[in-house]
Image (cartoon, rainbow, N blue to C red; front, side, top):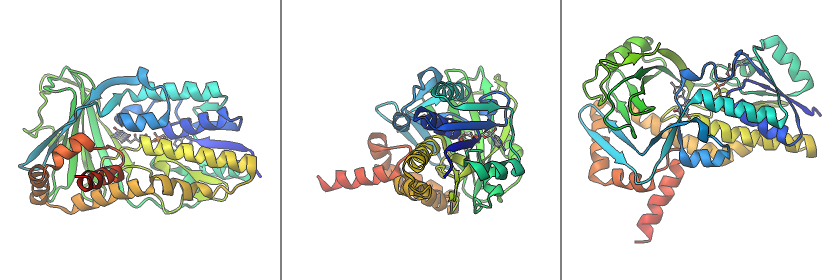
Length: 367
Ligand SMILES: Cc1cc2nc3c(=O)[nH]c(=O)nc-3n(C[C@H](O)[C@H](O)[C@H](O)COP(=O)(O)OP(=O)(O)OC[C@H]3O[C@@H](n4cnc5c(N)ncnc54)[C@H](O)[C@@H]3O)c2cc1C
């Protein structure tokens, strides 16, 4: 039985796993391709639900740059505003978050080696002598080295940041669903009263040029923010996996986070579920090393704990991606007519649709 754990990738999932293991005395080594922690953090956004952050149990406060209460959802003609009574989410500076997690992992005793991109051969060799965890993101080398089933669906994204923009409401994100032949979604997410990010996501296979889609999108007159005189950062394209792999453990090899596809298909948010699954992986590795329980428990446990919510996100994504622009407008209109918008303001949960369903039935059964 191996008692050393090698983690490939020092993103959020890999670093949280490293902290959990090292703090329980497990010998853990992390290999990270980037020379600097958080080097590629600009590729993604950092919108995280407050409820989800509580579950992670980390002190993220130094990384908070903005707080969010609401969202405006746009179809082609219809729109719906959601304004929760309490704060729903924080926008975190992803680079700072990565640095906080790195410091915690190192302080707990993990050996983190920066600037080490592991190739297929090295990964297979390391797998002969240790437990090995692929936390190496959307295009996982660990998954391909050990022949894991492929991720079936990806979203291709393109985003850029704007400074000195005019933002009418910096506590609200805007979400745009195109429907129709183009089938993409767009977002504006404020980082502060004058800085924001604008991005688009398109289902892979629909179109291939995310930059021209982005250029078209920023001209949408419905976007509430004014960016004409704003300074724009270099745009970045990236991939989000939105379906979990059919298998995430093989003998002594585990996958976590984006490498496993543990991402909400509705929004592409992967930090909370990736980190929760990393914690589950830590629990199973510790039990394997200390008590000899099988590592395959990881597959069963993360699916039992988080699989239903991830599946509900996937169902919702499948549903709205089949709708045309009229269908999306109709869905928004019906949500307003039946008060679903007001219900979500009071009882919504950004991560767990299963909780929203439970709250809905509870509310209607106790009347
Ligand atoms: C545009 C965009 C916006 C997003 N917005 C949000 C959001 O608002 N909220 C949210 O929750 N999620 C968001 N996400 C998703 C989120 O960024 C990911 O789910 C999360 O970063 C996944 O974490 P991870 O640790 O699994 O993988 P990653 O963050 O991808 O980390 C993997 C690490 O592995 C390293 N690596 C890869 N291969 C190797 C190798 N062979 N050897 C060594 N190291 C290697 C990489 O350098 C990287 O540091 C967004 C994603 C995108 C693209």
